[in-house]
Length: 423
Image 1: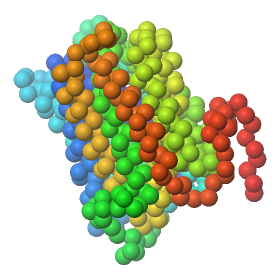
Image 2: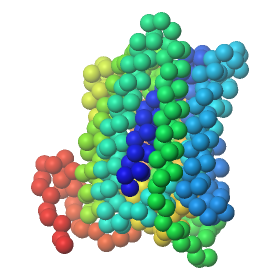
Image 3: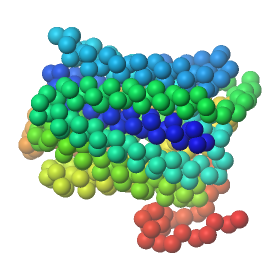
């Protein structure tokens, strides 16, 4: 497991040097709101489509680790041409979006195999605690990396911001190669597969009315759709409308990540005991409030604290959603369940970004100072509708402790002591 952590450290460093800076680089290339929507939508769509075949490729290779290693290398190679797109004239925006789409798709293709491998290595009753701890460690690394990348861009901006992007994307390439070296050393348990474990994507879709897992996927996909109507435009909102610098932009984004790191393990411990579904019900309401809070005030200090609240809410939602998949599937089905879950949520993210881009060009500012604020409001209202109706139609898939929602929240916040685990 120590090689998994070392692999994760360098993946987090790569993500810290890329994820939050793809949109700023697109804006440097001359991208518009429409291009920002495409940058968010197309990678999700392409990743969703090809990921459906990931379990089939894994089974043909008869190895999860072999698939992961191949696609780590392919993803790393996509980092090399990113900054070169600056010199491609009128085609540079389109080529950059295409490169990012491949970069994202190669990273997504290996995730079902990675999830299947990791859950075979972690005991079922400790997954929430372990992945919560793992997320805390790797999240800390990502925060430091994101801050360093922001500082590099801040310094480079005085001369030429392009040199800053060349530096951070080049470093990300090296980080991904180092992660490959550690992944190559990981232990891989033998993959057990039975004929009854197979089910096609069509079988999965047809079970939406009767399958608890399919309904769960529908709930998360609907949430992601409503979120991504506005999510791609927060970078534009901060950098273009509010005129924040790269350092302010980085610090506001880091507030969410830092809070998620601090709270991840506590969400994990309590989701192990109270159930992932109860955590999802709570956090689906909490994430609905986030866009509304952005509308109240746009002061940078205020937004920093709002992002702390965002990190608290999303840490519980994302961790419990992942663990719900692991609990709902057998080892032989797990890679396929992860692939189909990611395919559906990816398509939802694509449609959300597409809808947001369409609205961004047509919705006037109205009562707000900036038009994007109307899109943020629409996103909030949709999140509340989904949180109110959907989660209560789902069922927990394992035996958990009966805990009231208020009591669970207080425990996570450490305002109420945690009872000893029965042994």
